[in-house]
Amino acid sequence: MVVSEDREGQPVEVLPMDRRVVEALTVGLVAVLLVPWLRADLKEDIEKAVALAGAGHGAEARPVLDAALKAGQATPQQRLACYEGLARIAHEERKYEECRALVQQAFAENPNAKPDTMVMCQHWLAASYVGEGKAEQAIAEFQKAIDMAGDVPAQQWMKQWVQRLIADQYLVLGKDKEALDAIQKSIADYPALGK
Image 1 (cartoon, rainbow, N blue to C red):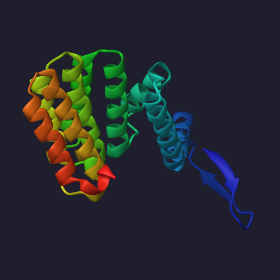
Image 2 (cartoon, one colour):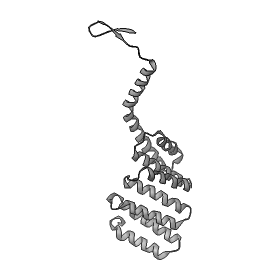
Image 3 (cartoon, helix red, strand yellow):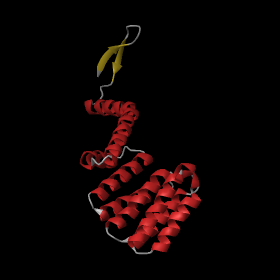
Image 4 (cartoon, rainbow, N blue to C red):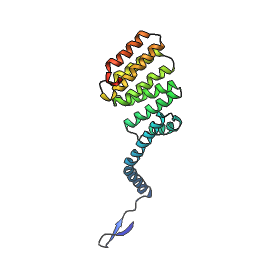
């Protein structure tokens, strides 16, 4: 039993607390107070790592993106950005199966995510087939990316770009008419973007 004083200077008996309990409460309080701060830093780290991945610096970006996924502190949108960045890196490293596995994991975790990141993930899935020389599979996956973009105005440039990637794959297959049709569709569907 510990004796202390109250505000008026009167002796008060205080039950001793186990040091481990005090430490656990302190750590818990610090963690609760720091979580928003940690998330802000994590967001900045993820954004920097995704930018590095996009600039061809996958070796620098991969550890940060992997750690963000494993830490469990990233928001669903941040996790999607991590998956998209890692899929990009895997594609650049010609690890096409890994690229597809990452995209599939992103889709499994976030079936209702914003179209922008989902369309980019779908793009990397299709691009993995391009890298393997599987043009027919690539065309089917690129078409899914167009469908995912829907009528979202911010995604119209992506739809036009992907339509042209489809045309490229038709050329690889020696299907010149289909390639021309895809280019014409791109121009007809998205005329403002061709200027």
